[in-house]
Length: 366
Image (cartoon, rainbow, N blue to C red):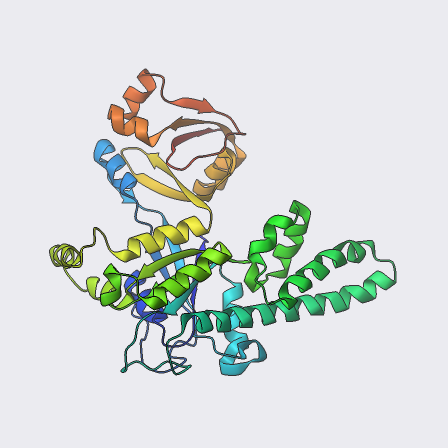
């Protein structure tokens, strides 16, 4: 596990409703600011039909999906970076997640108050982003002040670090998030930036929370969010948190009928989870045998020994090789044995990068 997405946004935009739908964890939902103070954490199955198609062929005793963690973080307000609305505490919760899911309210409802008085996605997004930028700017400026003193006395590490900090300060001074500019830094500089735990260096996905009428057709508020996401090169999904929460209370048959009435093939949560998974640059590989068919999560680019280590540290230490079968080949041939007989199962070494959908068998010896 270990991959966390933090759900953030202004108060009363639907964060906890979305979290409840995701996790059925029963987080408190109420029509007043700061209903959520301590973050709620939920573990959620990543929907992946490949797992169950593999299981249908293998007929295992157990099926285990891969999961993600979602963290419902309390609503931020203006001046959160200065401590307003318990802001410093909430910002520290954001530092602990790997990516940010920014929920933006995109519907009118006189019965649900808005902390800023009216619906305006662009303003709401700017409020959150500005608070994150200001918090990061304070972090960078403190580091510049400390390293500046060390540079003056000839500390080489400080002298090498200062140019990176000054570049970060320039980005933040302009009111920009750091994440879109990370591509301009080299590997060593990125490691330094990672150590700063900057809030705006995290990947962001905007979540346009609509009412039922907004599911079929984008309203003006959704279009605003789409335009902002496009300019930033960020991901964006549209979801009706209220409908998704209602779906969780229905039986499977009732759920299918409800989705059909809405003209949907699957719950919006499925796309939401998959997009969050992709946002973190994650892929899934599978292990398959009669005892268990299981999905595993790794970062894209992970090599075979490290992937084996996700299963057990002994497998990484004693790694010899990995047998790899493509998901598509298994589905076409109907069994792993047939894949082997036709030469479709490859033997790979320690430099092989596991690919999304690989079905693997690790050989190791201690």
